Image (tube, rainbow, N blue to C red; front, side, top):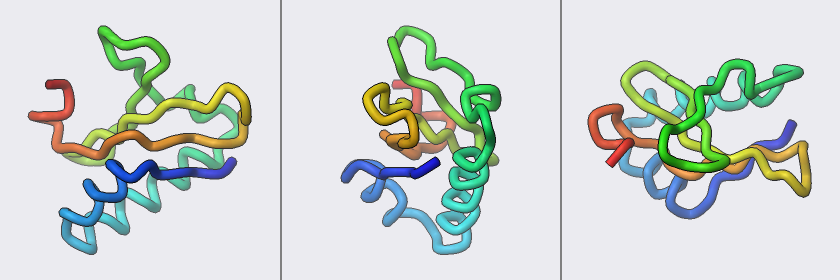
Length: 85
C-alpha cells in the first residue's frame, strides 16, 4: 500500500525531531504494509472517514482514499493533547 502525506502533515513532520520523524514514518509504512491497515486504526470520533494510528504520544490522523484503495492519505501528525481540538 502506498502512503501520501498532504502539505499539512509534511509541515507537522518538519517541526519534529529527526528521530521522532523516522519513528513515525517507519510506523506509518509498517501499517500500510499490512493486509488490513484499518484493523490497527481507530475511527476519530465526531468525524466521518477519518482514522488514527497511535505512535507513542503522537497520533497520525489519516483517511483511506476510496478511489484508490492502495493509498493512505496522512492528514495530520500531532501530539495527543492537541490532535482532537
